[in-house]
Image (cartoon, rainbow, N blue to C red; front, top):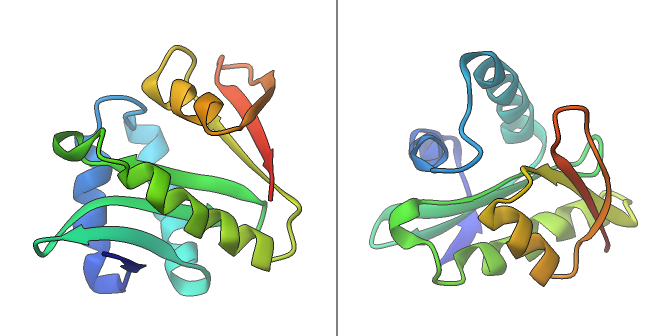
Length: 138
């Protein structure tokens, strides 16, 4: 079931985020992620895939800047279409906030890179750290 997350889901969302094998967070990134997550819980929406009482994945857009802030699936549940099902909800949040396109970044050579390319996202550049910048019309 896909639904909007509540604050009560935050620990389970955190568990999914910390379980991923790619795009792991270093100590310096965690504070930024926590601060942004605070704002999104107060002003936006996290979308979660819940199954058997557990969060299996989540998607979230930052409506301040038009980015897909996160799309993660617990490694034990990858390859089942969860990310593909969740992503349109986050994109719709951006469209409803007035954005004509969504932006995101991800590491080069990752499963995420392949996922976004296969789902119509276009590479528009690279950041200094090598992350790929993708955009997609909404």
